[in-house]
Length: 410
Image (cartoon, rainbow, N blue to C red):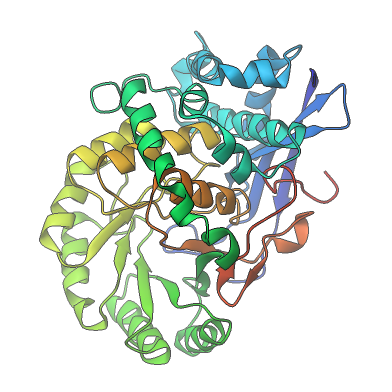
């Protein structure tokens, strides 16, 4: 047995070098984690976190302290055998739910708590998270999920069927464990990097083996965006993949105008073209800018909103992030929804890819999701005990027990 004895929180804020992490909206960020530490009566400790840009990180820690007391005294195996029920109980706390529901500070706290539980479970079983998930039966995995308000499109029976069908063919996809999972480089095109710097960064990324890169757009001067995009396309060549990310900066009209002007550089997707709550605007963009496709998810707070995006054909690439939605459990729920609607998962990585490198392996092997690529952001590598191993543009399969979430000095 591994019994939970206490919950602690740590407020970790990591300043970035000038220009790093900046986009059209978030111009001077820090990267920050509200960390949930689950202490037990054994040597194992669960580490989970939610991602912020610094401001309000302490508020998320306070919410973790308020919500996680329900876990104290639980055995980790018993807890995870019906974790979907516990998840629902925390998410629908009769007082704190008013602050959401299922979004904002309280939902970020739930993400950190959930991620710590999955990390502890994997450590208790002495396996990396990807293997823990692959070893679970479909019924056991679905028991870790909260499918409330999704039964119209994804019932527990539906979820078990998707997993069982995928499990029957999973041996054909196990080779990804040897080859690794492709990455794409986001650090090429932060918003404040000028044309010369994005050219140099693109050249570096290609030399490092990345076949796909991303550029931040959304400037007040459209020519700034167009020049930088053309420069990156010239540097990486016609065969490489270029994604654009507007970080919600445009109105619907601006998005339609700018997407038309980007056609010549053949972007793979346009990410967050407008306000994330405006699903109908995303639907309009997705229809009007075809064959350019829309990616979204970084700021979609929960599975219900993702469901609506999918129902309305408002998104082509699903960018759920397990440190922004309600943790590993809700990420897997969204992945099942995406399978239901035939959409690929390409996570946003507020965790810097540490946890998602496990989740995309499970998605591909255990759910038969497309082996697409995973975002790579290197700026916090030196803060992790086991930083993601990315070489030749590929995430190498992690082998250490847990979810790769342990932070140095925490």
